[in-house]
Length: 527
Image 1 (cartoon, rainbow, N blue to C red):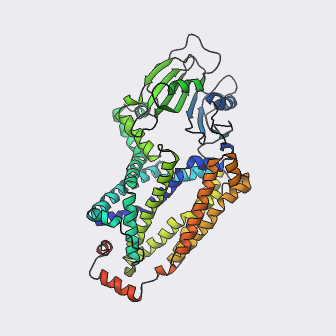
Image 2 (cartoon, rainbow, N blue to C red):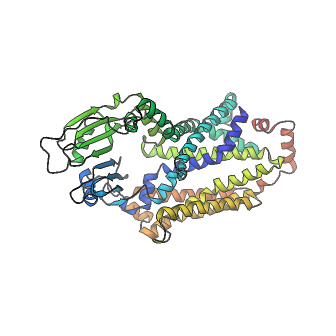
Image 3 (cartoon, helix red, strand yellow):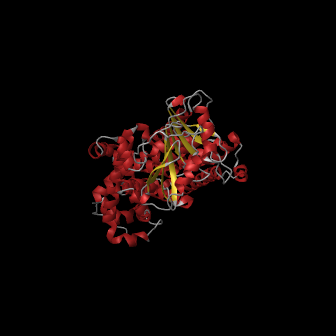
């Protein structure tokens, strides 16, 4: 049990650290998207109608006699979100993705996300490596479940006692071990949920292939209907009388919302826009529920006739499970307070990983093995080095070359380039504690510059954004300042002498407590 727990943590620890830190930031991807794209910043609590928001986009992309044949809308939950539009077919050509400000109607073309948001979102499931990155994250999730299970089993008989036991004044290995167990116990339900849902979502594409082949006759469309991402299939006849105007999306959304109590439309799909046999399907969930599936309402695209109604209560077990996984993993319940809580728990989980590494290294400090030295330096470069790299990623959104390189290419170059330099710096520095302090201080200073970059580039200084009601922008700027001050505080409080071998009384105490014991027994012995 102990070997499985410690070795699993060492093997996947740094990759898991990156996943948790990027996931903490991705929880606020909507706010980050507004921060880096001024056109999407909202200043009103009232959303414009769907017709007013989508009309200019469709007129621009679908000019001529051939309007888009397929339109998918990701409806904003609040005015602080943005309306996502995917348009394909017709004069629009292959496909176009657009994000629309729900209060002003301003829109920006967005193949995926903003450059900063996309980099962090892709990093969370290693999509820089494509689908193989997603599979890797899924496998890491499985190994994290193994680490959680074995760690809980090892400490089960003393988990309550260890929860109230934190002794930072003791020997370093004791302080790290106490922090590891306390933080791990606090975040145990959170970490278990994210390990399970992360493994599922990471391996979903791989597991979906046999599902579609054996359960749905090889039809991917039927598979996605069963999982609740599309409405059930329904035949659509040509309307006897076709209106000369396009259907009112706002009116259809209102009708769908009133179909069942607390039904909240999430996605709207318009097929064959303006055609006699067009259809509009609206998919949503029951507001305030976590473990539930989706409901669907399908309208005739020309006449507005209801063709199908399937309530969330009849979604089916498969639909319920898939949708509940996504709701849990992406924190699509509980509002802002839950996101802040999950953000803090994600950072605490990252600290669990680091304290596990530090403890493992500390009890083996006398072994003088090359692999231990490499792990210690990689922990500094990958984990601590992620702080200045992430701060530079945000700064690159406003401070970069104009037109000489694509926004995505520039942000990726800055982020991964600076991160690689941090790892190289950690590998060649002799004193690891000083490396941690230098990287923490650099990250803290750079984080404090993030509001400055926003203010100089857009005029959206925190006080200006506050007066305009741009709360997402204010939140990102304040968050950057808090993170910067935290990093500087950690750098100031770091004892760089802790990397040196213990001497004097501390050495006698450690030798006495460790004599005749394996490193694992030393770690468990915290009396």
